[in-house]
Every structure is written in structure tokens, then in C-alpha cells.
Image 1 (cartoon, rainbow, N blue to C red):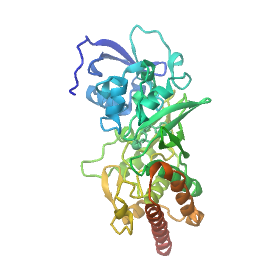
Image 2 (cartoon, protein in one colour):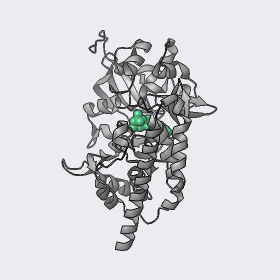
Image 3 (tube, protein in one colour):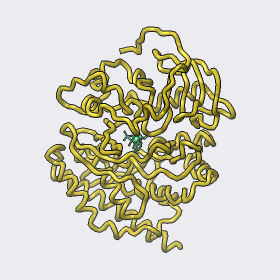
Image 4 (cartoon, rainbow, N blue to C red):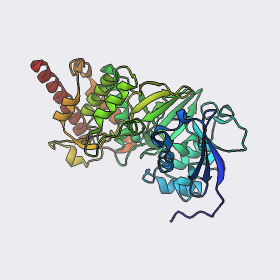
Amino acid sequence: MPFNFSFRKPKTYLLMHKNIPVLSAEYDMDKAEFTKLLEVSNFEHVPYSAREDNTINLKKLNHWYRWRGIPDYRLGLDRLLNRLDIEDPRELLSKHYALSVSDHYWLKEESNTKTYEDISYFTHRFDQDGFGKAMFALGRAEPEESALKTPNNTLAGYQKKAWFHKNADLYLYKGGTFPCQLEPIHEKLASEIGKRLGMDVIPYTTTIYENQVVSVCKNMLDEHHDLITADEVLSFKKAGKDEFEYYSYVKILEEKGIANAQKALDDMLVLDFIMMNTDRHNQNLGVIINADTMQWEKVAPIFDTGTGLACLRADEEVEGWTEVYNYKLFNSNKIPDNVSAYLIKDLSRYDFKSLKDILQYYYDAMKETQVITGITERRIKSQVRLLASRIKTIYKFQKKAAQKG
Ligand SMILES: Nc1ncnc2c1ncn2[C@@H]1O[C@H](COP(=O)(O)OP(=O)(O)O)[C@@H](O)[C@H]1O
Ligand SMILES: [Mg+2]
């Protein structure tokens, strides 16, 4: 279906950051974009990737805004939109003030007197099962209108996902790719490996939702913190066209006074190495900042490490895996093991012996959900062998690095 809205006149809206008016602009509800910038009220709070020198670039502002939302390539998008009676995911962007729970930006009409506390999803409930079922259900789902009042409209990423309130906390349920649905299990595995190796990783568990395996993790933010992804961070210092962005990223973090930036990146590289992560693009890492002061506080705990260990490959490709494997990092899709190991500044501090029984952990996690995924015993064993070979390989690199001194 083409993007086909009826035409309404653009109105003046305020982009807010908590209770701080950031800018006013004409906003076209039909196209879901800012059409004319009117006034900048607080430049300090302008999203980083929308800035250009000391001004705002309208195109970049719209790009930032669009990428806060559900992408066109979200798994199950057609079904979701059908159920919500929506034609295009962009229509969702500005529903219910464009509120998110990964940052604190929102949009309101100039005349609206609401405060952030009146509406924030950090403190206000929403129809979680309405959207959850619209996103995940394999059978029928007929959500009420209230399903649209949710922080899920401004939630990025490929996998099916939805936020849920439990007690006072927010949890993200995230699915995997059929048929094996290994990504949620890999999230859990990666967080267990990370924990044992002393890394700052978001803890993930798994559960069954709508007859599918989903990973479950707590929101890493609260009312005072925003996540800014590497995309935002890199808008500070564009790498040259053919330059690898990794070095710019480290430099920006160090200039911003982030403690242990290199150490945190080493952790991510080690985990990605073991997990054969093919998906460490610029939305899958970042920094946590204080939303009240815009102070950069720390590297965000490692998240989204599920797409690895050849989970998207066919059974026979995983069996006896011999391929040279390249993984994704920033703007490169071709990082082989030796380059990855080269980038890790200090491999000596990881106690890989702590992973002794992780193979059993991985095996059990796949067995636990086998009735749902239908994964074969043979595939499970191939997966375990692959993990074993990754641990062995990084251990060898560690020994080699030690010999070199
Ligand atoms: N624990 C979390 N707390 C807050 N925001 C999160 C959390 N996990 C993910 N997000 C947000 O959701 C986006 C998509 O999540 P991600 O795990 O990367 O999904 P996908 O696997 O579909 O890419 C992230 O870029 C981030 O903005
Ligand atoms: Mg992601």
C-alpha cells in the first residue's frame, strides 16, 4: 500500500525533553515529519544526530525521529499494522505524544499544558497485552484502540518486541527468527557468559509468550536517563568515508570523559567474538546520559547479542562449521577473528576457565524450549560444538597474546 494519508494543515508542535521545550516546529501529522523549524528553545537538549554545527538540520531531525520508531523491516509488521488498522508504521510515530522508554523526548501541540509527569510511561500503565498480542499472536488478535497507547510505537529494531510493566519495572519481550528462534536463547547465553567474565551486560532470561520463545530484559533506563546509540555518538566526529568508525567512537567517548570506555569496548568485542555476533551495528551499542543535565555517564551495558552462533543458517551449514566468519562492527561487515583480537586492547583479564560448564548451560537452554521451537537434537549439538570452538579459539588468541607479551 502506498503511504496515503488525507491532508491536514501542519500545526505548531513542541519537541520536549522531559519538561524542557527543545524546539518548536511545524509538524505534519500526515507525513509524520517536521516541516519547518520555528524556534530552538534549548540547543543543549537537541538530539545529537539532528545537530549540524550550532544549528538544527531539519532532514537530520526527521531522520532521528523516524529511527526512534518501528522500521519498515520489523518482523511481523504487516500483521501488526493490519491488527492495529494502520497503513504505515510512520503513522505510529506521533501517537500518544511520541513517548518512548528508551529516551525522554515527546511531542505536544503548542497549546497543550500537560507535563512529562502527567504522561510518562515510566510511571503510567498502558494496554500492554493489547500491543503485545497484536505484535506476537500467531492466532487471532483483535486489539482495542488502547493498544496504540504504548511506548512500543517508538521502539526500534528488527525483532518482534513489546514492553511490559511488572510491578514498578518495565521489561522488554523480544522474539526470534523462525523456525529455531535461537536469538532469545542467545541473549540469555550471552548475558550469562558476560556475567561470568565480569562484563557489564544486561541480564536476559527467556520465557514463552504467545507460544513463542522471547527474551526478557529489564529497561536499562529510568526517569533520569536516556540511551544514546553509537549513531548519535558518532555524529560528534564523522569518520572519513572509508574510515573504520571504531577509532572515532573510542576517541569521542574518551573526550566526553567516559570512564573505562576502552575496557567496555573490549568486553563487547570479546563477547561478540564468542557469540559470533553478526549484528553489532550502530544502534546496538551506546552510552547512557543523564536526561536532566545531558551529562554523559557511562557506556551502556551490552545488549542485543542474540544474532550469532550462525543462528540464521540452515542445520547443515552449522554442522561441522568451517567457514571463515566475518562479523559486523560499526561500519564494517568484514571483521575476521584476527582483526577482532587485534582490536581488543587487553585480552589477559578474561578468565575463560569460568566458562567451563557453559556448554551444558547452552544445551539445557535449547532443550528447555525445544517443544516450542522444534529444533532437532542434531542441530542443538552442532550449536554447542560451535560455541565450544569459539571459546577454544579466543582462548588460543589469549595465549598467543600472552606469549607476545
Ligand atoms: N533494556 C533496554 N532498555 C531500554 N531500551 C532498550 C533496551 N533494550 C533495547 N532497547 C531499545 O530498543 C532498541 C531495539 O532493541 P534491540 O534489542 O536492539 O532489538 P533488535 O534485536 O530488534 O535490534 C534498542 O536500540 C534500544 O533503543
Ligand atoms: Mg538491535
